[in-house]
Amino acid sequence: MVTVADLLAVDALALRALAGPTHTALRWVATSELDDPTPFLEGGELLLTTGLRVAGDRAPGGGAWPDWVAGLARAGVAAVGFGVGLGHREVPAGLVGAGAAAGVGVLEVPPPTPFIAISRAVADLLQRGERAADAAALQTVRDLTREAGGAAAAPRVLRRLAAAVGGAAWLLDAAGTTRHAAPAAAAVPPEAVAAVRRLRTRGERTAGTDTSGERTLLVLPVGVAGRPQEFLVVSGPADLPRAARGTAGTAVALLGLVADRERAERERDRRLLGCAVDLLCTGDTAAARQVLLADGAGASVPDRLRVLRADGDDLDAALDALAAVPGALAAPTGRPGGALVVVCADAGAPLRRVEEALTRHGCRVGTGRPVPAEEAADSDASARAALRRAGAADPVVRADDAHRAGLAAALGPDGVRTYARDVLAPLAALPPAEAARLAAAGRAFLEHHGRRQPTADALGVHRNTVRQRLARLEQVLGRSLDSPADRADLWVALSAGEGPGAPG
Image 1 (cartoon, rainbow, N blue to C red):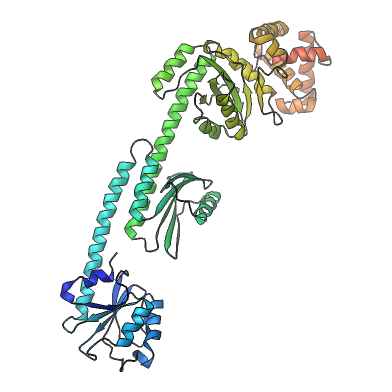
Image 2 (cartoon, rainbow, N blue to C red; image 1 turned 180 degrees about the horizontal axis):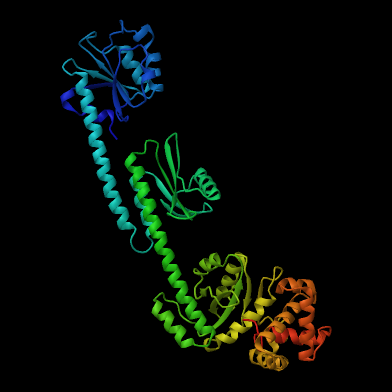
């Protein structure tokens, strides 16, 4: 920024400050002898005049100096340069006093100094200022690029950007929540949060700019494709330079690359965790430990653990939240039963934090029994059974809760598997496809409390097809679905994950 003081420092001009501030920003030079030049000004000018229309100590047009200077102040004039030696031997005292009172600089231009020399000097200062700003912006871009490498890059980029613009910077998520701020304690302006939510709702990728009073506020979407998931907010001075705005654009691009890199790293970690969890739940504990060791993230398989199964509409957000729970291994899975989470068997804070994180994101949760690591498959089986009992009224069910564990818990995993194979043995004599259809019909019928139409809707078949399949199931098994005892036996057997047409 070029100021009046910079112009005064040009010795060849021999300008002298008589009144008003000298730190005011100087944007151009205007020469006028009009009574009222303000319609032709944009603000920030040094107004040069020789006072040809000034008589005595009266302002141009014969008015009072305070009124004339007040008009210049409203137009944003930086200072008045009064040329002496032509119509006046000295700068009128009324102009000097009015300038001091209104905060408008008053400069004396001596006879040897032509106005054109002042214009050239200002142009040269502005040009040098632009070159310096561009060089500083280039250095800032280099600094931002360096900060964008390595871990925890986003906070470093924000700190460097805030310093470059002389203000503050924030990285917000799509809901307007602050992820990072520089300075760390800076509160994001409410109007920026409102702008983020508006842009997100409309699906717009345009930038928002608000310049008012003493501040410029920029709201910039981060990323190059799809709906933006993050927004950069920058707050700087009202006269934020062009180069600083370009620096903010560079920061947006770098933050997009940082987000892509972090997203790829999260996906890699999730795939490795998913592999380890699947190995655990299929009984290969040694291989699971090797996978986690190769990952290098410090995760490990606890000696005693629980397996939790969860389903819901926001599993990605739940898994992100679980990353902050010590000792929890969480990963999505393509296998039936939802997300898998492995935690320490201790029923204290770690387990509660996992269950709370899942329910906070709208998940139903089945918590398996605590077992040695080598028996994780048994804990997984009990977690599946517990998840089937979870619902809106009771979103978390633990398999070892005695008051609601039921017959399956009493029998234990081995007993349930044996029991299910015995009850469903007649289905094994049927073709596999038919056995699966009959088992699915029986399961859906029991899940819908013996109501045939909801069962038909769940299976995607006609009500008469349900009636036929249930009759065939009763015939093959030699049991009646009208008998409460037979229903109970069939529910345990069909829910155990064993036998023909078993779930999961």
